View 1 (cartoon, rainbow, N blue to C red):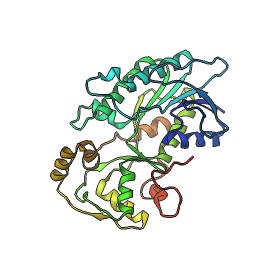
View 2: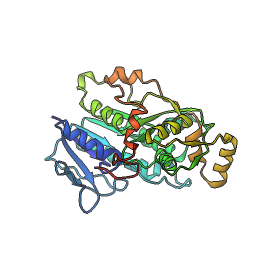
View 3: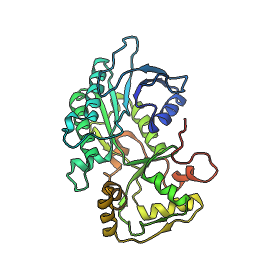
View 4: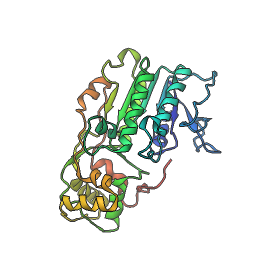
Length: 312
């Protein structure tokens, strides 16, 4: 049995991850900021302040094998604030300082593939990606003497998601036309089940088997899929054929600029490539355990796990 400490544990990924770690017999502690901790009686909840403001206090009676950072801000900072002064960067610095002070030997940081887009200088790089890239750099610098894995997933989907994929599912459920018939560029996703299984796998790798390569890993289901194919797949799983309209991509981009939704349009029609997953398999012995369409089954009518609904 190992002892894990999580930040951001009450979020979309954290709620599911906690259950899987507990089910595997591990000891789980987690930071929380609310007046009352979330309803997980087997978790040792540790009250803390705003991670973007303060470094949590170290309680010497606890000893942890691993820190899993899921903490994130809901909104990016204004463009006139340097990325190294953003709340995202401050969280990275404060969490890193806590890990060092608490002498935790291993850390897993959940970043985003948007950081890779920013790192590669691609034209669709966003402020969000720039802030996460800076946070990754802080973790890499401060935790250079620790066993560190930074995971950069694309959009994560699963029960309780609130994302562009959930918005597509909502349009299909309402039988609304979707103007993405020509969105054929391949993109990557990762299911909540796959991401949690990867985190659990990395958490339990023995130190003598810790890979020398890395420590930044792009992760996905290993299945590129276009948005138009995804929409059709969603419709099939939900039992409601999607109404795809082949609107020209140039018109979609124009509509995005005029409405201030260019990032949303880009996330639907632009290619999103992910590094070859074989390196991840070789390093940690992990492979995705589910892929679309099977991984979309939670969207079926009557299963009680539709998108946007909070699940424990």
